[in-house]
Image (cartoon, rainbow, N blue to C red; front, side, top):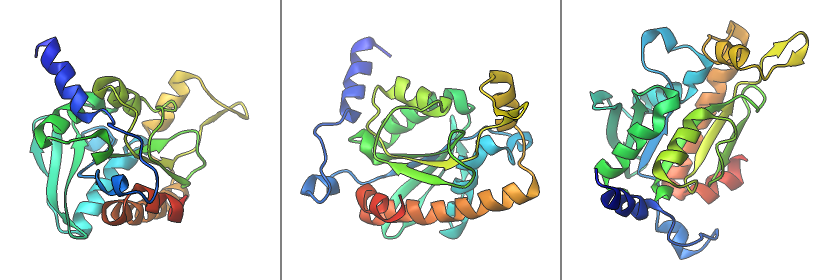
Length: 222
């Protein structure tokens, strides 16, 4: 891809103006692509890092939408609450999520980054706590970092589900190897139950974002 074409396509998804709650412009950009972050492969399926995949799988089942592999992502396209939407699970691994998302943005011809919603785990939030934001930085989440760097915008909504930070010697650990092992491991049963309930709540958040917009969902669930 030439540099000029890359910049032109990137310009299509750059935010065109600020959006204030309750304005007509809030309705201009409705979410059309929901991306759950995770790693492909059965060995990762139950990992904390795959919460985005958990959410996409359950949302698809709830609305009777089936996933199929398509290039760098598994996709399920159908209608949720009267709106046509594509659910996606990148097959590029979390740290390279931006590549798959960028290709989906072009493929689906999104008009603005605000038509993308990303669902992911968050290590700095308590287990099972959720937070929806309309935009912002990556906050240590490498999948979000990859997306932001690749599409050239932070102006897309994201729903984080807390998995908590691991402890080492009685203190929260920031050691990359400890954090990596923690994220790429399955939570124990009691914690898994709490996360499952959080993911079920996340489906309601996503559905409200699709039907009524990000600002409405933020006011109700944050």
